[in-house]
Image 1 (spheres, helix red, strand yellow):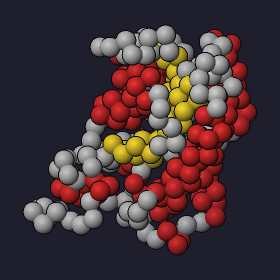
Image 2 (tube, helix red, strand yellow; image 1 turned 90 degrees about the vertical axis):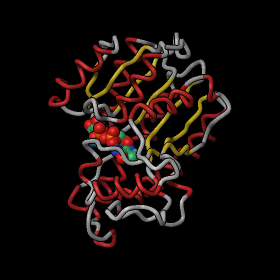
Image 3 (cartoon, helix red, strand yellow; image 1 turned 120 degrees about the vertical axis):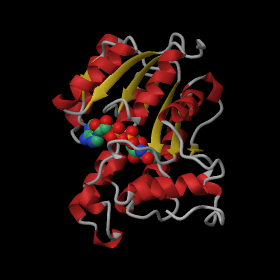
Length: 264
Ligand code: NAD
C-alpha cells in the first residue's frame, strides 16, 4: 500500500454495505493512508456502517439524511469540531422511487422528479459548499454518475435527467472553487450490482449487455472505481477538475452491439 493519502482527512457519504461503491473508494483511500469519517442515512444502516468504518480504523460515523438541510449542517458542525479541516469528500448518494425506474420517463411524477433531483443533485452542491469551507489547504470533491446522463438507457428515466444535472453541477462547482485549489470531479461508473442498482428495472440484463459489449468485455468492480477515485482524490489528479471520468470498461465509446456478443 502506498502513502499517497497520508495526512489527508476525508468524508465518505453513501456507504450502505460492503457492496456499495463508497466501500470500494473508502478502502482505496484508507489503504493509501487517509483518515476517514463516514456518514450514514438512518439508524438502520448504522449497524452495517459502524463495523465497516472500524475495519478501516475509523470511529467517526455520523448520521446524515441529505434530504434535510439541518441534518447536513449538523454533520459538518460535528466534523468541524472533530477535525477542523477537511481534504476530500466522496458523495456516493442517489435516490429515486423505484416504481419510476421502469416504464417511461414521460410518466415521471412531479413529486418523484423533485425528490430525485433533491437527493441526487442538490445534495452534492449543498455538501460541497459546507465541505469547501473546511478545505483550508485546497481539496478534492468527488461524486458518482452514470452514462444514463449522456444517452438514454432503459429504465434509468428520471435518474438520467438527475445525473445530467449532477454532471453540469460538477462543472459549475469546479469553476467556483478552483481559485481555492478545490477540485470537483465525477466518476461515471459502469454498472455494478449494489442496493441502489437493484431498484432499476431489468438490471441483470443491463449488466450482461455491458459485459458483452464493452471494449474490455466485462463489467467493473467497486475496487476498480476505488482505484480511479484515488487518482482524482489525491495529488495524482492535481490538475484535473470539472471532469466526468468514465470507469466503465470503455462502454461509453461503443456505438453499436458487438456482432459476436451472445444473446442474453
Ligand atoms: P448503494 O445503495 O450502496 O449506495 C447508495 C447510497 O445512497 C446508500 O448508502 C444510501 O443510504 C444513500 N442515500 C440515499 N438517499 C439518501 C439520503 N436521503 N441521505 C443520505 N444518503 C442517502 O448503491 P451504489 O450503487 O453504491 O450508489 C452510489 C452512487 O453510485 C449513486 O450515486 C449511484 O447513482 C452511483 N452509480 C451507481 C452505479 C451502479 O451500477 N451501481 C453506476 C453508476 C453510478
